[in-house]
Length: 481
Image 1 (cartoon, rainbow, N blue to C red):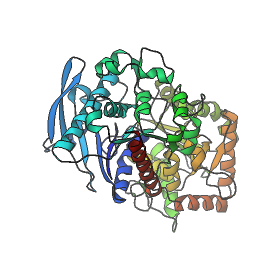
Image 2 (cartoon, rainbow, N blue to C red; image 1 turned 45 degrees about the vertical axis):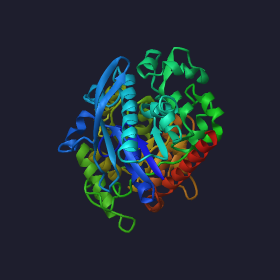
Image 3 (spheres, rainbow, N blue to C red; image 1 turned 30 degrees about the horizontal axis):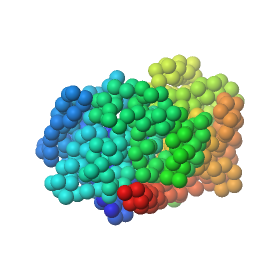
Image 4 (cartoon, rainbow, N blue to C red; image 1 turned 120 degrees about the vertical axis):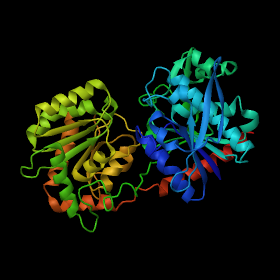
């Protein structure tokens, strides 16, 4: 089976969120399992050093409305031999930001056109035709639309899969984007989603063009069929219920391994947990937190946004700090008002709360290794990787039971963490209190830690589920031709 895997970011070349971890690890595992997988992603300004000395494998120009923009495509193989095609489109990606630009519609229209240029090159020059094209999130959705419309004669036989990593981000623009994409003659298909007639919605077009759709957890796959979580696209998703599923993410267990991680103060394993205490002491030193009577350290490594439940944290902190001696470390960036609020709270509670605004991968690993509890009070959570990484490092998660958190964290007999359901600061604080009480019982807490470190969070099981999904997409495509 030949697979072209398309994403706007992929670790380690470019990472903004969890999508990068998926795109960096899943194709590798698929190749290990016998799939001839290749990755395609944009070449951003910050990645320039990656292509130094490389020769473009092809070049050309891409249409954007009446404009023509330059394209160069580089091949930069991964360390395991996975082909990585980097699309250099200066008009779109020669800038510092990955997302959030005023012209993101134009940028990712150009990216989709660049992918089609690459597919033509692979077909005509290398005689490599994918059996499946796997697109991820709205930034890549138009590739599937082009395969079903402008390029149907050449590529219409190819099966397609579309993965929703976060339905809240849809790439919704005005009708002018349809013109820029060269899709005027295919009209406003967004009507099928019940969206306004002048809307051009990248996500909706990806859904309507795909043979199979999946999200990154079974619970989230079910949740988004309802208006409460469906972000106005639940109607489309319900009509495609028989082609819609949820597959849990894995993590790169070679990179995230406390037994070999060179970035943490001391390594440790299920056979010798002593190094974790050294990591906790080092974390206190990094953030200048007092040792006191060795209270539990809770941590958040997250985008600072309302989706992630930062408002719950804000509301719960006073009572939480009054009831226990817990300390909290926060690493992340995001919505400016939450960044500022975290700074204010850190100044108010200097011995209890430490905040680092921004993202630092090495520091994140040190936090995973040094914390006792890992907090994810998300309003909604499609999959979640933080809780998996934290458990890999022997932390005990405290999560809201939604999306992938509901699928991966259990409380009670043979549990691996603590959960709450109601989206209230009281429910969140009570769950943390239960975790702190468990921490005060070292034998029970250590039992959960060792259990968490022993579980298999690798991509092995998930990759097999994706292979099955690809096979279903191929069968569906055969039935529609």
